[in-house]
Length: 316
Image 1 (cartoon, rainbow, N blue to C red):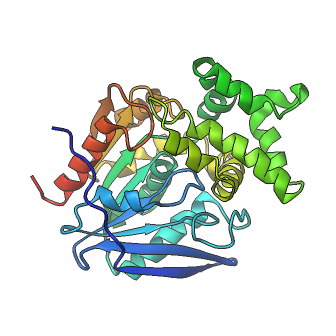
Image 2: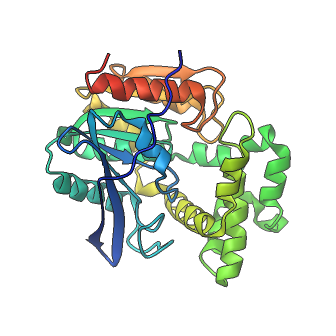
């Protein structure tokens, strides 16, 4: 029987953490105070957390911190790009670990969250008890080209046509740069219009089958603005990673128990990159899920994620 989400739960603590540079990040804690510590890293970047993310952990066995990364969700200022990089986020995770008062914790990240989890774990392996990664994304140029230039375009031609429609023909050789210009200049209304087109394109292809609720969330103006602006900002800068850095440094993970879960038909994040990580980190459990796309809500993916968090809490 496939495992599913734990029942809905409310945080036992919420707060705003001043991380400097004018940024305040929203965080919440769920589960049982003093139980197994964990941190949840959301996707995007710019996606923010949702109440559903709290339900990936047995609340009787875990004490989980979830937070909105800089510029998104309830964190402020909204959609801010200044002092917003991968390495700022890695430092923010460390500040939250200190708030939690723990030396080690389980790190759970999906999609962009897997990128951030890898960057954090390779920087601070001594503070990671286990890693649970879903929808592996290494932020390499081939991955960006696959998504924004040629690849997804062949699988979803009608959706890609809508994505390129606002961009003049002469700029379509670099869609990422073209959207970045529109998301960081012009009026707020113009930015939101570009953001909704960007965000909806992604929201419509991350599940194996269409999910109207997912599409509706990505089409909402305020969500889309942070999501698109922050994604474009990170991606035009290669997420501030050196070429193949996350694979190059994967040897630092080899003493950390880990689980990699990836959908066979993941469109934003092709499976070859999850396979490449598995080869560099063979000690991790590897699950390539048939009949699944990118989202954690895909039944086969969710099943393996819940099994992983249960297992690392000592639950059979």
